[in-house]
Structure formats: C-alpha cells, structure tokens
Length: 464
Ligand SMILES: [Zn+2]
Image (cartoon, rainbow, N blue to C red; front, side, top):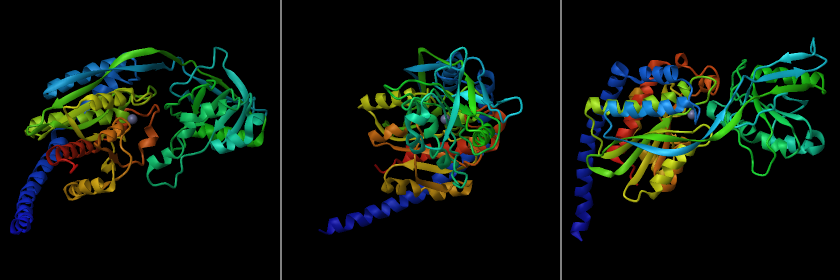
C-alpha cells in the first residue's frame, strides 16, 4: 500500500527532473536549427535548381522523372542512411497548345472579347474546332440544379462563386469555392451542359487563369472544363447581365496519355533508440505546369531535404526513425500519398507515429494544423513555448496535408505546416508560381520549423 502511494511521487519527481533537462536540450537544439537554416541554409539554392533548371513537374512528365532522380541523388549527398524508391503508377495529362477563350456578344464592340483561360487538369479537349455555346452563370450546385435540364442542356455553364474575401484564413476561402473546380463539370454534364468555365481560385483580381485538378464522376458524360481569370470572370458576368444571349467560344488541346511509372523518394534517417517507430515528413515533388512549381510544392520539398542536411551538419541523432518523403502525384491523383500509406499499412514491423507535410507555401511559418483528437492536439500544443521565440505559435486542430492524412488510419498524428496564408493563392497553380515569389528567409524559417517539429516528434513521441 505504501509502495503504491510512494511510487507515483518518486516517478513524478524523476519525470520533472528529466523534463527540465530535456527542456534545455530542446531549446538548444531548436536554436541551432534556426541559426543553421538562417545562416547556412540550402533550401533556396535547391529550390532554384528544382524550379528553374528542372522546371514544372506534372506527374508522368520527363521533368517529374528528372526531379525524382535529382531528389534521390540529393538525399544521398546530404547524408540519408538509405534511400527507398517506392514505385507508383501515375496519371499523365498534358495541356498541349495554349487554350483560347472568347466572349461573344452583340454588346461587345466588334462582337468578341478574348479572356485568359486554361484547361483544368484532367479535362478532355474541345476538339479541333472548339466549342461554342450560350453561357449560363451559376454560383453553386443548388442554383444549377434548380435551373434544371431545361435551362442547361446544350449550354456552357459558368461557375462564378468567388473565394470569400472576408475569411482571414485563405485556405478556408479556397475550401469554400473549390468544389466548382473539382466537380462542376460532372454536375453540369448531368443536366446536358456541353462545357464548363470556372472562376479561378484566387482572392486576387487579375488576368491569370489558375489550373487545378478536376474529376469526372463515373457514368457521367465527360465535358471540357476550363478556368477563367478573375477579371475575365467579372467581364463575362457583366456581359451576361447586359445580354442574356452572351455566348462563349472555348478551344482546348489537352489529353490524357497512358499512366507512367514514377516514384515516391524516401530518405531514411535511422533512429538511435527506437528505430522501429517512424516519423514521416515531406512535401510533393510534382507540380502544375503553368508556373514552375516553386511555391507548390517546391518549398515543401526543399524544406524536407534541409532536415537531412541540418541533422547531419548539427549532429542531431533522432531517437526514432525519420522518413523524409518526396511524394509523387499530389496534384492530380494522390497516387504517391496513397501508395506510401498502403505500404505503411502492410509494414507490420514498424509503427508510424506521426506524419508532417509542408504543402501550404514557403511563407513565414505560423504554426501547425494537427489532424487528430483534441487530447493528442493538447500534447503537441504543450511544445508551443519552444516555438514562440520564432514567431510560431499556432499549434491547433486542423486539416493535415493531402499526402499524409491517410496515415491517420494507422493512428499516426498527422499535421501540416501552417505558414501565413494571405499571398498563397496569388501564385497558386498559375504562371506566377516561380522562384522570385518565394522569400529565402521565410523559406528558411519554415525549414527550421519543420526540422524542429520532426526533432520533437522523433525524440519525445506523441504520447500515443
Ligand atoms: Zn501542393
């Protein structure tokens, strides 16, 4: 009886002594990570090579294959204990010749007004003569369905619901609008539409069409789907109001080629004490084609690679094993993330305790969105004091990265780096996704923040 009363006291005392010592260690390690990243970081140079020398990396493209080989070599040079090439078949969609989009109305001087458009990823082409039809503007699927087949059949449907500018988190605004892009074509096709045009997913008013994935529902006729710039969308809406007979001409030359063999590239840093427990960290190596995939998601890739370099340079030895994963095909299929999850599920000799992704841009890191129950979120949130000196304070419940969220099914705590979101959709999936839109210092802060979180997870676990 005495023993059972005494034990927790002694144990508690031991724990508190240990945690004080660990706290000092953590502070020292994190300070060294931030100093190393900000003084000697290589993330920007790596991003330069990835985005400029290799360029855009659509799944299945030669550039994507080149990026895979670059990633493999980089991991070996930076000092990963081993590199695993995880084979995965990916879709191969190509845009083809630049698209044409024209508003046609008697209210326009000369009758025609060109607007910037691009095919949505995965769309079919329009055929060599293009598609012409009267345009019906809607803002959501309810409005579309209320109009019904009678008003939609044979027409081009124009989805024009903007991202909500009053939402402070730009990702929430994106989530509130993006179903038009992903599912609009099939919803409209069910009512007999011949094509869809979708307002670009951005809070900006500009002339850049933003691409992104769209999906055809099974058993529904496939129709072409394009994005129009936000200024183009406003113009089209204006002409429709002035002239209900306003029509649109669309020409797109994209096509889907046979699937290609590709890889997730996995760098392994073996754990010194618990090698069978794994912390996964990564970003996605593929990108869209209009820019150069610098922000989305070159930033997440180089931040992940920096973890290997900094751990080696600073002599940080994680207690648990780390998988640094360059995921393939996040943008238009998620085949890489799914393959990694499936292999992890089969891998009974390892326990996957946490998975962290950086796929929300290279802007100043503010925190992590943690996709787990509140009790586990609270455990991670206790690390907040370690991050606060670096302007990182937001460790809260939220959605994790697309490539890692399935790891939840294995009881891993999944999360995503949450940088400042305000400018992310200015450059998302359009021609401005290039190196000079990434600030080196903000990128380096993100790399140090990712490395710190991975260090904490690998050495202190998740309490699960
Ligand atoms: Zn991305």
